[in-house]
Structures are given as C-alpha cells and as structure tokens.
Length: 260
Image (cartoon, rainbow, N blue to C red):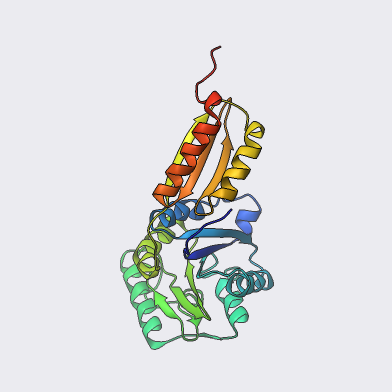
C-alpha cells in the first residue's frame, strides 16, 4: 500500500476483556473509520488489548512511540469499577501520575448532583468509584461527557496526541464528534473509484501489481465477492480515476457479466 501525499495517521486502541472474550461486539472503530475517511485522516492501526494494566501500558507505549502516529484514540476502560484500568496504563506508559484538578472535581460533583436529581445516583455526593473517573494524567486536558459520567483526557506526548474515550458507543460517538474531531488536522478526503470485474482475482495479480507500482499516489485493492470482484482505487480524484481507467482497459474481457 502506498500513498503519495502526507496524511495524518491515527491508531485506535480498544481496551476490554469483554470484547476479547466474545461477550461484547466492538463497533466503535468501524463507526470511527467512516468518520475519519470523510475528513481525510488515515486509520492505520486498530488493536484490542485486555484490561490488564501491563497490557495497556505496552500497547500505549507502542502506539505513541513506535507506529509513527499523529493521533491515538483509546476506547473503553474509563468506568468506576476495579477493572477499568485504561488511565492507569496510560500513566505508566507516559510516566505521569493521575491527578484530580479542582475543575475536574467540580465537574464530577455537579454531574453526580444532576444524576441524583434524575434518580440515577443514590446520593448527590460522588463515591470513590465515581470520583475515580475524574482523575486524569497530570497535564492532560479534559473532555466532558454529556451522556455519561467519565471524563475523557487529551494527552500530548512528543509529536502524538492521545484521546481517551469511553467504550459505550453513544458516548464514544458524541465525544468523538464534539471534542476529538475539531482537534484533528484533517486533509482533503480521499476519492474512491471502483470497477466490477466478472472473474476471480488471481487472474489480475500481475495487472494490479504493475498498476500499483506505476501509481504511487493511490492505494489499489481487490475485494472478492460471489462470482465477481471489486477493484477499488483510493487517493486523489484524478489519480484514482486514471487507475481505474487503466484497470478497465487491461481487464476489458471481464467487464460484462457472463451469460448463464
């Protein structure tokens, strides 16, 4: 895969034993991938790790230092229970402690009071589990959660920026749109051009290989379906259209559906 222009690179780290055990189906990264594509950000890595602090720490270190990422987004592990350990893993990875600022404490106390008025919390004062969600890495910015209780964090480490989001899809989506997306330096969205060919993809191996070698501005992929394949070029509009035009010319014999 090659791209000829610089685009911001983003990696997503999903935290949760319940996902790895098959109890919960992860959907946040699928939703986010479509949003990122619309805004010209390349999602280049998705990883799921356990709730073990050492696993979280190792994954965060790799995402921040080894993968040439501009942005990292974590999903899950921000709740009030003992197995919500994402923030702890992050602090170990970046070498900064969790702290409770007066602003974050005030936000959480007001959030709990409102939740108590609505009958969600038993008391209007936060307990230790709830207050745990207001502790963020030292120096981090805070992202409010208007649908839930946990705060999100914005952490700058070197050239990368990390955002922590809850795993609950509706909370994840709203916080992403309201607090993350406005801070991403987006490029012009890629153009996607495609053609349907009525053949099996191994027949096009040399054609597509040579075409990608000659078109470094686009990514070319083939996707087999039942009885046909879709060849897709992604990149600047003119280059993507030219690549698919070349596919049409080289594979003209497969453009029409064979008679049955």
